[in-house]
Image (tube, rainbow, N blue to C red; front, side, top):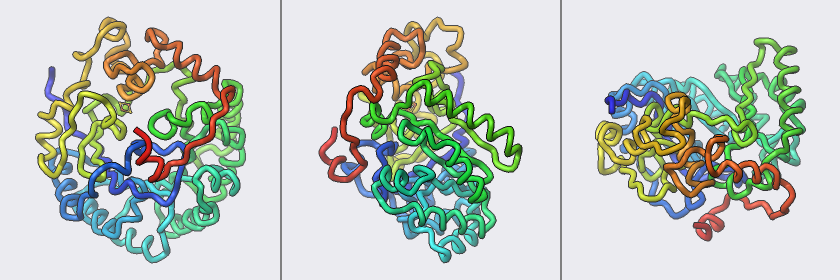
Length: 365
Ligand code: FES
């Protein structure tokens, strides 16, 4: 197979610690069982190695990256190296002083998450009282002149609030609003039957989003991240395994996507022991699902295989229990009926929501 290009995007998951308890968190279910976080020197080395490989975009996420006292130092090194730096945050911990320090360090961009346009739902879904705090943080972000993306994860409990969410984002001065339909991995997969919206809810939300787009023009761009369970549209996940994204977990494990470490039979290298060049070009974990050579039927002979690259390996594992299978979202997948029944059964079987929490994490497999 052809030599892969460089990773363009380094996603540094600085910590799994988080003050929120979101029911759709994409951190692994067993996050509390993983080892110690990388120290500052290790992160700075990872940044240098990634930049030397050709990475240009640096995402700083978590958990809550503001819980790291060395965030400013990491941002400053990212800026010095020439990365475009983006902080993905819940806003908890962003004081006026820290905002100023991050600005001075050279932070380029902030993506702030809200759970909903109402205090009740925002605070319920995150199991914290953070709604007012987030509004204050949005003001700080504007004060520092950062372009602001407001990210709201959409699901059955807030999808009918799309009008109010868009109004709120516009009032807060967001340049971009990401209405991110829930992707069903990790904690969201656990809570899938409570989070999946109905087809009718989705249709209405898309209609309302289009109406707002027409009304707001370019003053705020709205992205409606497609919900693949409903669209039966296979996504080219992470733009292709080992093609663009290099994700480094808090304990230093390097991954082709943020949930890949749950896949069985794959060992991913740790940046404490291996350089990024070796990890990217030579490790078995990054090579396993690159390109199309690993495919079996129906992907192997599909005329879409170079376009969607077989979809998502993690979804294939979660739904079909076979990471090499076609993404079950694809109508050609022998397991596609599992996606259809998940949508049909959504909300019919009532189960309690499981909030992301350290105790739950230690209990869950
Ligand atoms: Fe892991 Fe799609 S999320 S390959």
